[in-house]
Image (cartoon, rainbow, N blue to C red; front, side, top):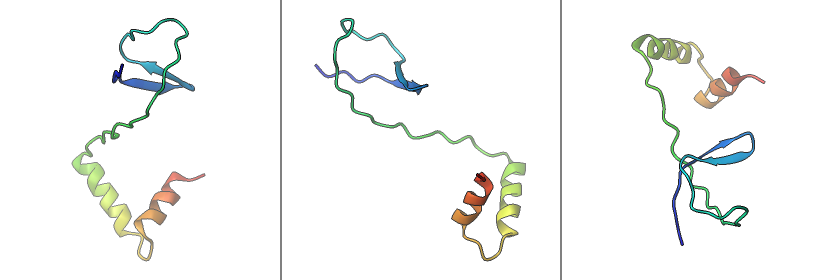
Length: 72
C-alpha cells in the first residue's frame, strides 16, 4: 500500500503531521520528497537595502557576497 503523508524533521526524527494507519513497530520504507522552501516577501525598504548592499560591492559575485554575509 502506498500512502503519501507530510512530515516535519525535528531533532533527528520525522514527525508526521497526521495520524498513520500503522501497527506499533511496523517497518516502512520512506522516500524523501522535499517541499520548496517558501520565501517571505521583502518589504520595499528591505528590497532597497538589499539592492544598496549588492550595488556597493563592485567586483564581487553575488555568491561571494552571500558567503560573506553568512559568516562562519
